[in-house]
Length: 204
Image (cartoon, rainbow, N blue to C red; front, side, top):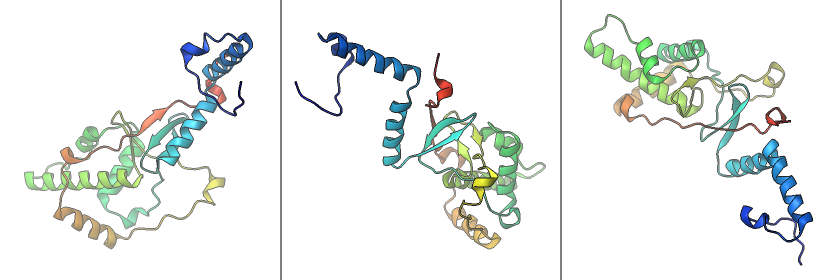
């Protein structure tokens, strides 16, 4: 016999223990985690944070994990390009839209082939930048959405997001245009969802 604060036992062995009281205690703990896996989720969330991942709530309070920290876009509309403003407005108006639909709906009408290609490249670069910075969330099913804004009371404690001037944004676009990224080359930031450990998921 020995004492320990934590022990690990596999499922097969736990069902063959000669001590019935110990077996019952294990069964009760297993049933409790099945009803509401809050303890397991806390351990899992702590491990994910230690690995440098970010956990946030979205879509009816569901928890998601991403390598990018989601944050609300705080720049003034006048300080960024019209392409970025168009992307943010379209995603805000139609949450769940994917890249292909976004490109089709923001395509430049009545433009020649060269102008249309330039607009397509600008859109791809701006969308890639917004996703990489966490201003737009791209989920693992390809859908796009904006991060949820915090409540007004909590917004006062939120550090201000530095504003990007039109000149600095133009410099960034110019730098990216030297090594343009095609839409086929852009890798999505995979955002995976995990079950919400809250009491609302517990079964009676």
